Image (tube, rainbow, N blue to C red; front, side, top):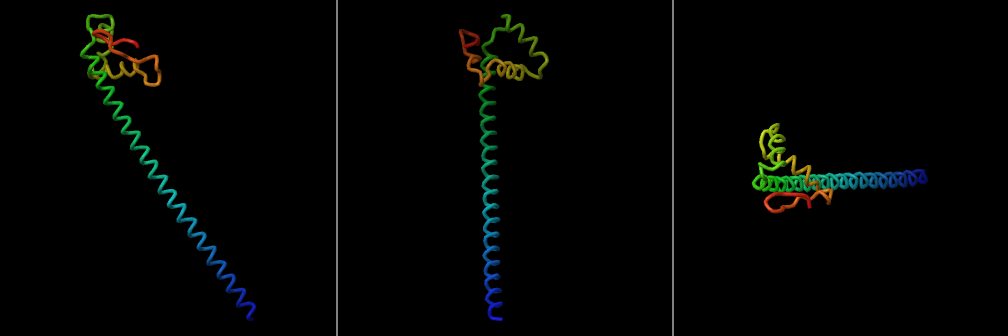
Length: 120
């Protein structure tokens, strides 16, 4: 009888230890998941800030290009036709500048040259 009580106590202690380990495991897992979610949210915020910054820079470039381009040039004539399908010249210029100034292609950098913009 004493032997059975001792065995039961050992089993109970073993079960308590296993339960504690299981509880710790799930608490740690939950904390890791919260950390992952927070990191993902930070990445999303950073990416959105980068997109907004790029959009502002691109808008500035487009505004500068619009101020400087020559409507009587071949490019100006072409651009007038091109921009007619857009809601505004700025929107058309944004698309045009984006196509010319691909940030992933170093050979397509648009630079100011005299009173117009041209390939670098």
